Image (cartoon, rainbow, N blue to C red; front, side, top):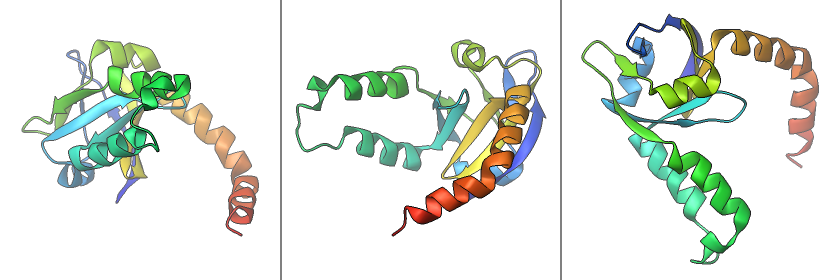
Length: 147
């Protein structure tokens, strides 16, 4: 399980070190894709296969006829890229993904169970502050959905 919050520096070549705790679980090749809430998602190859299957599974093999499905799949798959983890645990974040979330000097690297998220450090801090204020209400809402 991928958990925890880490702040790491981005070097001049757009590389960031994955926390050693994550490297052990993620392997030498990972997938980076645009995420939701202004972050990037990082998946292991195994998790990416599960995500891909769930996004492409449908009652019809003509799912490409549904506009929402086409749009979201383009968003997730069209900008996804496979990345090698180098010998000291760094990954290269492509410019188009780095620019998408405004990464500059530091990145917040967050373990979220089955994936890692990369955030602009300031955006993560702001988001975290908002969610922390809502945590009780969110828990109540999620708890009531389990009936």
